Image (cartoon, rainbow, N blue to C red; front, side):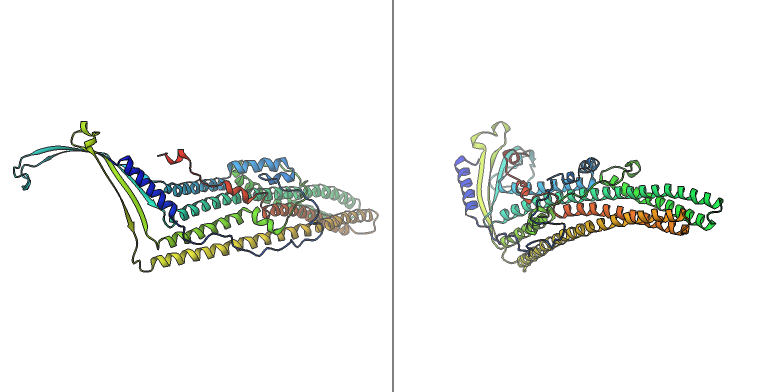
Length: 492
């Protein structure tokens, strides 16, 4: 069997070649990307004014809506898309652990026991001219140790790529969570916007019913024409139709929320409630901050690190590989003598392998890896540029909607005054009922438009938070790596 002296020598040699090895391939550096100095902002934004930060992990809490918070927690627990991303993260962790395990030697054994009978008519042997049947036993308990020395860093690059891929998958999970929670918040505020529109329509229907009773009684008294009754009745039924069609949109928004929280749509019902939330004050920060706050940017950056390591793996194929091996054990014809010193056997050795001719395969593989890295750089830069665009669009959108909501509120107030004046002038016999109907329709349209703008403003706030990364920080990825632990090394 392999002696302690020989095993120590082999181990020392393995440590020496491992320590003396170099790592081929380019050293990783994050690619540069053009970063604007500041956002293009206007009123009511103030870059120097303090604004509320986004809570890490639960960004939706800035809206201070208990129902929204409850839905978000359900989505994090039950959303199937998030569960898929979690499973992918576990796969990435296992893949990284698989590469980390290659740092250690392998130990294997293949015990065997055999009893055989040799034929008496077997071919003659000069050493044993007498031929007779022979029965014999062969019991072997071997052990084999193997280790590939990482002379040129192929294994180190593989581990580097696997760890970076693990971190990229972790960033992808955070990106999925952010997308799902933002989509849920957007659907929730859209639902509340539709509830507000439905309430406006229902209140308008009640008002029109009272107006129809008024004009009908005046018609019966000879003070109004049948045309006045028909106009009011037309507007009443048109408004009812809008309410019925809006219920369909509400159900679709409700069903979308059901899927996001992991519940069957037929069993999910959310009570109707008017929109009463206001967008929170948000700190857009500096454009450079975005590089560390968005998980999709972090994922693209980690994929760039993976591609860089792949170049090193490809270049390592140009260099020879060194495999160290040792085997030993016990072999005996009698199991009772198996563990005797005389039954031991051992062997140590090493072999070097080098591909002399590959028909250009290694060069092609290196070119493939370099092209992959170039693609990852372009993808990273594209992700960053799109992130800047999304934040700028949402900042501009909120600015526009903030102005629009003020002017639209003034339009609603003016439309309400117009209806009051038209109604008074009609009762006084100064105008026809058509003026009242037009004023009623105008007020309804402006109230609905105000509800839509309020909903859009909240949805835009959600999109801005999402574009800013939802309070996430790329520094959390530093803890996402497989570290060597004794229990993992000795685990089967």
